[in-house]
Length: 329
Ligand code: DGY
Image (cartoon, rainbow, N blue to C red; front, side):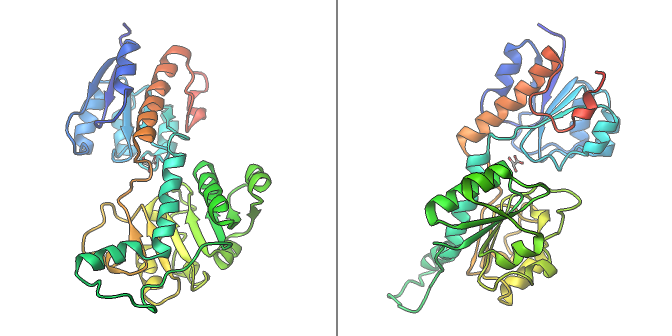
């Protein structure tokens, strides 16, 4: 039995809590469905050594300074834009995360949204519900095909790679991408071609966003960006809603600047039910379910627990966001 106390901020699937208890930690779990308020989280974190949290927890400067005693923060998720990483690093609090676990699940959602959008599936479903399926109309309800089209990936990392593989395998799509740095594996295995941001906008038939949210990517898909895309293009976002400007996206879709959009992430979340995007024919939206498979979520919980266990056992965090915070620990 060790004397470290771990607080788990949500009800997570899988065996994260069990693994921690088996390793001898004293574990307290938040046992309500809703996310905690920041005040509630601070109150709990104050009396624990480590925090196991997720994207609904606001780990900003206020939180970090009130809870600067925390020895490790372990995020359940590949994204960590809810955490002020530079402040955590300044306070020398290491932050763990759970990459890889959800790459397939999220790529499946991007791929699914691409197909659903290209054939207006969600809108057609709603029309049946409204009693609007009258008879076969040869000229109505036409979608577009994906075979041999160009897929542009913005942020070709683990998830983008899985999306690219699916598109190459299913539709022989040409893969182009824009990243901070080149991805030799994708170039070798998928014949992917690195292009600048303008090239990505201009050449993509489907443009799928897989970047992380940061100061460079926030709002990058705005009016100026959409205006350079093809009128037949489909915009897919499964990363973070703040990467696109929603007002500009609505305008681009309404005026035919681009053809359609498939979104797993919106801005804000949750999206309000009267949002105009929900009424659009060529738009498919799901409520941030990219990592939402049993397999992915169970593995995420395991990885988040292992990050804590390894930190206390070996002073090593297998998946760490800010290794600088560990120097001389
Ligand atoms: C992530 O991992 O960042 C997803 O968006 C939520 O699970």
